[in-house]
Image (cartoon, rainbow, N blue to C red):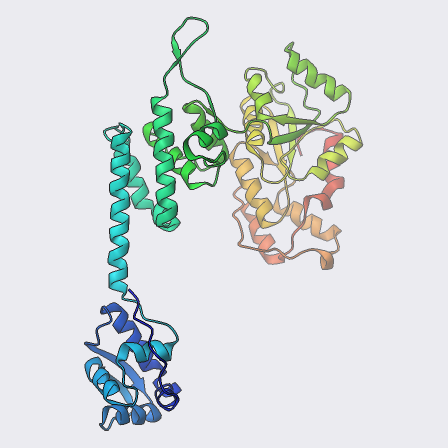
Length: 439
């Protein structure tokens, strides 16, 4: 609730009451009024200098000494109405502080009423969708309440997202099984993510990563599967897959140089042919998914993994023999899947990236997924600084990031405060690819 706008105070009155010596009084009165349903009751404490004491004493018709004083808001209200101001404390405070007052208690109560109605509507929607008694629902609702996810989004966004989420979950739950061509038994309908989103939210991107509706649906799927909600693109893709939903498996790619899987599979033969033709390959998830059982390298093979495309481009230009993967910054879903396939197959994957905080953060994630550092130690960073014109290097920006594979790296990067981008170390990296052994 907001107080009604009233005519501004007469200029002489405003000049008297708006003196800087009384600023603290009006600020304190505003805080008390907004907590007190705009009722001028109770007291405020305020520190007054000599000028403030004289002016307030003149308004109240009493003598005040400078110092910390407790002021009765009721007396201040009466004095203002009897003065040339001819209006109450709420209007005076609004004028002098520059904006109308809010009854914060009423606002809070109104918000609570709106949110209570939202949760009731959600219960009704779940009942209508025949999901109210599902074993996972209580856990899902508890997580939504405890994380504050909906509160941060705001009531309108939360309401829209919840409605779309319930429709999506109901569609996934209640879609009839389709006859299998082979034996006539039922099989789960396979959805494309954008198809499902258009069907349930009216927006083909309504369930995309980063959209609240999609996040709510994934939390529900995780609750139903008794899993922790995923915190990575790969985890989210796999969770969608559990309920027959296929995310984008074509547009995201990872670049590979000289990856030549062994064996007789036609795809492996094709990749070896591309290696022989000195061609860079852009792998997609769809491609990797079609050959889930094909080994990508013989066990123990050294594979290098870089952050920036210029490194792979140079390796291809010179026709270097080492196998190189490029994540193009933070790897896409196919990059993470390729890394997992390589490491689980026994490849020895070494990772190199930028010596800046975003680059180190990517390196930490890649190494946590099974790679080892490739020229990413403190000694490599310091060696680079001895060879580069440090007066032309960019300063490190942002918060520092832990480097658990070599804690000293974080220390020296903090001390030197300079970023070294991967391309500046091209000669050393290409040297490793000329003679592909562990670096």
